Image 1 (cartoon, one colour):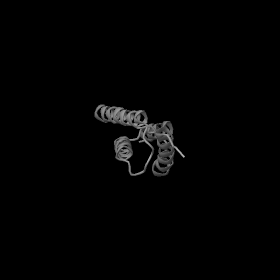
Image 2 (cartoon, rainbow, N blue to C red; image 1 turned 180 degrees about the horizontal axis):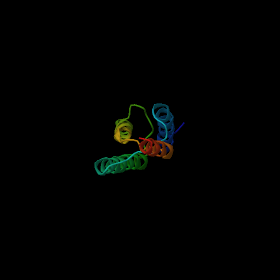
Image 3 (spheres, rainbow, N blue to C red; image 1 turned 45 degrees about the horizontal axis):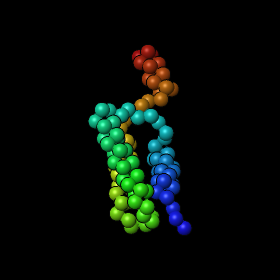
Image 4 (cartoon, one colour; image 1 turned 90 degrees about the vertical axis):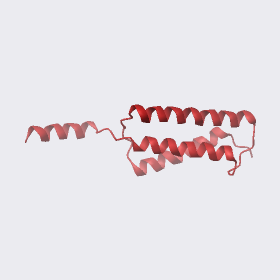
Length: 103
């Protein structure tokens, strides 16, 4: 059975989303200039390696160095993203505003 890299990445992405939802709610994050640039570079690197892997027509192996490199870059991408501060929800901002009014 042949599995494409897109299927592997989608499967891993789905698992990561489930892990991320357990770790932190689906809240927006404030991504600064430096983190945004890092995410952009990592995204391009991941895309490049995945494209090269697909075009090479290699069979998928868990111990394949190219797959490990993609997984490493994806882990770094998640790390950079989750280090960005969460943006307060609208209800949190309203509560904070009302609390300041009542002081």
